[in-house]
Image 1: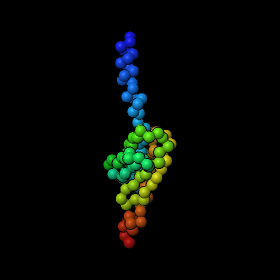
Image 2: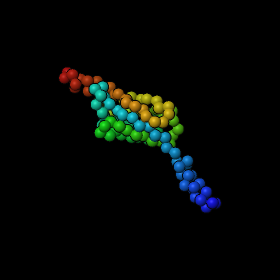
Image 3: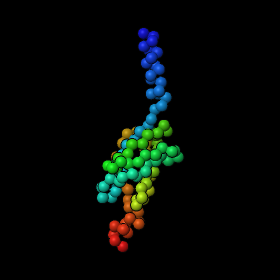
Image 4: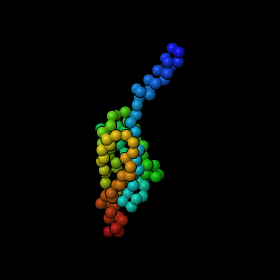
Length: 107
């Protein structure tokens, strides 16, 4: 019994000591299209993630929640959002920057 309890405690220590806080979400443009390789970073940390082909990201950090995440991608305005707890950030819409708007309008 003692060996079993001791073994369980040893395996549980890494789980409690290295907990990760995780947030997932999806980045889309004004037309509802996914944005590939948008950068998602937690403010004041080096924790960074990138969106996949579907615009989906997962970012993990050892930092406790109340994160400010910064999202950027070429051709779009940089946006900042607050994440108050773990889970899903849902869909985040990035607006086109002025250069992209001019290109799309043909001016």
